[in-house]
Structure formats: structure tokens, C-alpha cells
Length: 506
Image (cartoon, rainbow, N blue to C red; front, side, top):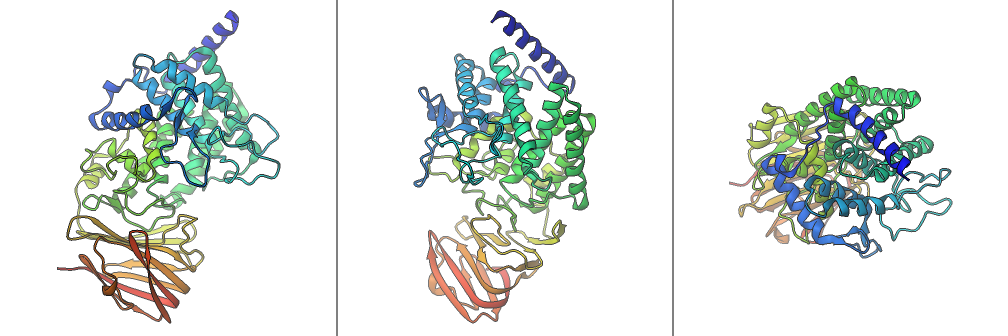
């Protein structure tokens, strides 16, 4: 046992020396964080501390779904362990050790299975059976989320975890990489996961002295960068949630990439991504203009998006696109990502920071994205809207998170009003300085969320909304209006074209 201890300590010191040479800090503390990062972390930890279950050694799901038995969260508990090691108060190391041990116990270690190397989403989740469907019975992406968090702990806090636990974490990362290689399901265009995978490949290659994995990491990162450079954009385009994961992975590349080239291209992509975000972000509306390639919501003021978490790390609460946190907040558990963000910190160019804080004037955006796809948007003083042309290959689908057309504005009472295409046939949507044009062949359902919107003022040819008017010219054969939650859905059926002239009301 004593021999194993010293071997483990030796391995940790070798790895820590390698990573420290790349610029990793060894003296992280809450007091070393900037004001906003510290406030973000403290808010996250307040919730995590309250959700901690000392018997399960995990944190509880803050909002269990009615059709799931999920009581405890594995991935989010690994983020809590990282936060505890950063805070490093009395008892925090012990609690982190208990959490990490429990998380490690949730990893699938049967090497022949497609889910090898990933983790249960909750300890209540049964082991997948032969033929189990990915995403339904297991989530392969937990490999990258948990594996990268393990790596961050081993880089930043090698002296705050025991040698035996560190050895188990290194072995778990190896299984993450092996499982991903064996399953062969990842493609470089799957932006957020591909970026995390590239970092982990390099990390494991250096730790294990694996030339084959080094070559894989080099080739993978080069291909991700090549694809990005074609349009200076990721294939998962304009996503308030997944841009947050991209920024996380790129921060890992620029801070701890296995090669100097990886660190350089990581910083380049991170800078260009922040510039792209600043083009679409409206500080007054506190939202990213659509369309969204993948979105969990349309109003960042009312749900926790990972981009909002990043922006809160450098903006005061009153300006950041993040809601006040309560038990009723949508996607509440994503706030637990705060320690990963706080430790890595953002690298936002000063001119981009200015655009994220102060509105820089009206502008029209036209962006080619891989596909081929074209994104257009109009960002006005108190109004913005956007659309995506897909060569009529994709339509809006709530289960797929694709939102091809959006409108945002402020209502007279100061609340945010918004419209989104929530369901449709395959379509093209295009924004210009006067409005949106949608072309399709079938039906389009648009959701309107505006406080005090009145049913009788929404007609097929004219929507009169609080603070906004939309004049509609269309060849639709049918028009319907349906209540949906706190808002209304308008449905145009038998339609090939919808022209929406959009203006703020005086």
C-alpha cells in the first residue's frame, strides 16, 4: 500500500509539472477570482450546498422531471466537487473526495459495450441492455463533460486530492478516450463535444506517453480548426447553451492544450467566437438574436444558458443575460457549471467587451454557415429578429432544438416580448431591415410570448402586440390561434410564403 501511494504521488508530480509548464495556476482560490466570477461561484455553491445529500454523496436534482426517476445528478456533482476544491474550506476536500469516488463508481467499465467509458446520468439509471438506444438509455457525452472536469481537477488541484483518487481519475479519463475511439460516433462538426474530446485526447496522450493518441489529438484538433476556418463558425451555430460549452472547451485548449499549436488555435477560435457572439448580442434586450441552431429557450433572462453563465462571470448581475436564481428557474442545474467557468475565466477582447456591454448601433448581419446555410439578422435599437435559410432542408422541431426564425423586443412595461418558429415544414427564413420572409410548403407554427397580448388583436394579416406591430402578407389557406402556456401560437397552414413587416409601435 505504501509503495502504491508513492507511485501515485510520483505520477501526479510528473503530470503536474508538465501541465504547470503550460501555464496552469497552482494557487487557485475564491479570493483570487474577480468580483463577478466570485459572485457567480458563490450563487452556484449556495444551491449545491443546499442540494448535497451526505448519504448518497451526490447532489440532488433541483427539478426532477415527472417522467424520470432522476433524484441525484452525477455530472453536476463532479462540477460541485471542483467547486469544493476551489473553495477549500474546512471539510471541503473530504466532501469532494466522497463525491468524486461516487462519480467514479458510476462509470461504465465493460470495454466491449458501446457505452464504455461514459457515466450514468444518475445512480438510479439502470445499466443499458444489449441494443439499448443512445441518448435514451445512456448519454455518451457524459464522457467528455465529466472527463474534462476530472482533468481540470488534476491540473489545478493535484495537491487537494489523494494519490489513490487521482490514479482512479486518470484511469477514468483513459476509459473516456478509449470508449470514444471504440464507439467511433463523434465527428468534428459536433462542435461542443468535438472540442472537449480534442482536449482530452491530448491530455491523456501526454499523461500516458501515447504517440498514437498524440497523432490522433493533432489530427483531430487540426480538422476541427480547418472546418471552423471555412466560415469562421462552428457547425452548431448561434446556440445560447452550446456556445457556452464551446467557450469552455476552447478555454481548455488555450490554457492546457497538449501542444503549443493547439493552444494558439484554441485562443484564435475563442476570440473569433466572442466576436461572433457580440455581433448577435443586444445588451439592452439581454439576449442573443436568433435564429438558433440549438436552443433550450428563447429568452435568456428566464432560463439558465451556459453563455449567460459565462457572461455573468464578467458582468454585474443587473446587466448579465442570466435570470434571478430560484427553485423555479428553467434549466437551473446549468448554474452548477460556474466553477468550470470561474477557474478558466474568459478572454474577451476589449473591443468585444465594449459591444457586449453597450449597444453599438443598428446593423444587418449576413453569415454563410456550413450546410450550405445562410443566417441573416437585423439588430435594431430596441428590436431584433433573425432567420436561417436552409435550402428548405430543415424545419422547426421542438425535439431537435432548431429555431429558424425569432423576434425580440421590449414591451411597454419593460418585459421582453418574443416570437419564435416552434414547428414547421422545411423552410427558409430571411431577415432584412424591414422584416422577415418565410418560404416553405406546408404549415408554420409561431409562438408569441408577450405580456398582456390580446387574442382579439392577433389576426392573420396583422398582429397588434404590446409595443410591436407585425403586418403579415401570406398565401396561407388557413389561420389558427391557440393558447400555449403563458403565450399564444399562431398557425399558418397550406402556406408557401409569409412576409412579416415588423416595427416597434410609437
